[in-house]
Length: 218
Ligand SMILES: N[C@@H](CCC(=O)N[C@@H](CS)C(=O)NCC(=O)O)C(=O)O
Image 1: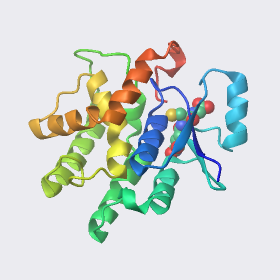
Image 2: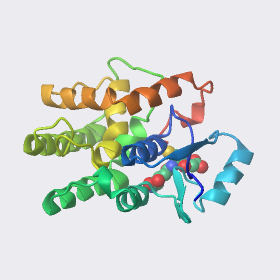
Image 3: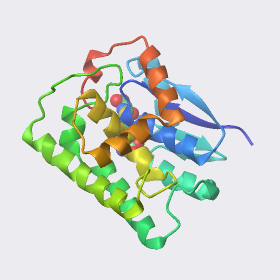
């Protein structure tokens, strides 16, 4: 069987690439990373061949092509069940899927006004009311999960797909200097110190390009 591949773009800017990559790493699936420059026209044509929506991430494994992050999460949970990407308990599983769905389809103001940018830090960044409403909702989601599970991850001792889906929110809070409560700060520190995150952030910081048009939601 050919080795799995995961197509991703900028590690500095692409929140969905980070989610897909973390999910694949959490799953334990052996994969080869295919990086495409987000501003390169021929690279975009290549992604089009891999992924009909021109979106990354795109996972190819054992005859399957999956180009949506939530679909990748569900696929990996099926292909690598021992990884525990979803909690074992049915009720928690439903909760986990719900909060993953919420970040996948919502939080548009947060995503547009605080774009992922791992190279930068903006001390005292002004957060507008509508973005704050999204931040309040993220805090409520994390507090509810952490109070019920006891942490350190959202659903307890083991990382689930929810931790991967919310990881770019953690980095946004760091980039835009969003102050967190003690409990949420501990969660953010846990996510930031995962070896996979450390590896991703180091690679993001080593990326040469500064792409102005990507300094918005990507
Ligand atoms: N809902 C999609 C979102 C993926 C997405 O928006 N990806 C961005 C990068 S973070 C992208 O590929 N944009 C391609 C482009 O700008 O052409 C998913 O779940 O994977």
